[in-house]
Length: 417
Image (cartoon, rainbow, N blue to C red; front, top):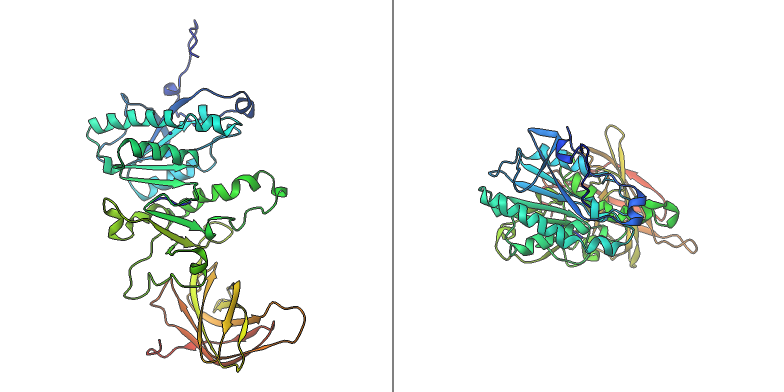
């Protein structure tokens, strides 16, 4: 999903985009989408000198653009109703808040606005050619290809890719938001890359049913620009392996760091800076609402039942202030064998620093038949996000099926693995 385009001669005075006090993104109506629009590309520059008031620029008028700084292009996609992207202003301001750079909004709404997707997609190469001409001029003025960064959404991702190909893959970076197949040096798959939590599951959800999952990539990228949410992803061959805790060694003590989603993804590993780095798939889960962060823990359980038990575990954490967060580890049944440790990957919406109480519920998923017991010799809770935190343990527990068992954890012995 994740990677790392009529002239009328009138005897009157016409006010152009460049005459606007603060040029705005082109607003069109659904009528325009029905009748179709001819392509017109408008480049709007934002910098820290003009944070909220764009400058319309082109290859001969660069405005406040500083060729010695990073230049980030934001390229939107298909616009079936003609309305401006609701996320555009937030993305511009967030980028400028984290780095002093040039941010250029590529407004090709006149061209992207149509109810026929193929009509919009047929214009993408022309948009890329416009951007190529502009970048060529910026390079003449002293800019570097290494400082060119393109963020493309949906068809905008295709445009960004076309521009990258025109420069033989020498652009500094491309982030493509809106494609399932692996294409980049690193591809991020939130929640497996399919249905996103919090999005409507049926057509009864209205317009959000059609665009929520697709648009989530933009909002996840935005979350990476906020200090209170750094989403960690885990390189893995499959989503199932990730959910089963087989791919979360990165970030642990004496291990390599894990990649971060979004803006800071290119900080991960030196090989991303190589000329031909390998392709990597990374998986992670998110919460239903902003800022979408999920906090991972391992729940290590050793049982002493004579017979094998299969089922799921629900774990709830409570801190000293009474805040609670819960994780249902039920994507597939776990198999508990006598004296065999099972490590379950738990995902919480909150990260509670001082855990005062833990509760566990064991379930086989059966609504009829006998109720089972899960006899726990030892339970251990360890944080992946903060491996330096003390690990919490509890010994000799008996869980009655579908019954919540609450207890106070103790610190695990330091020598315990």
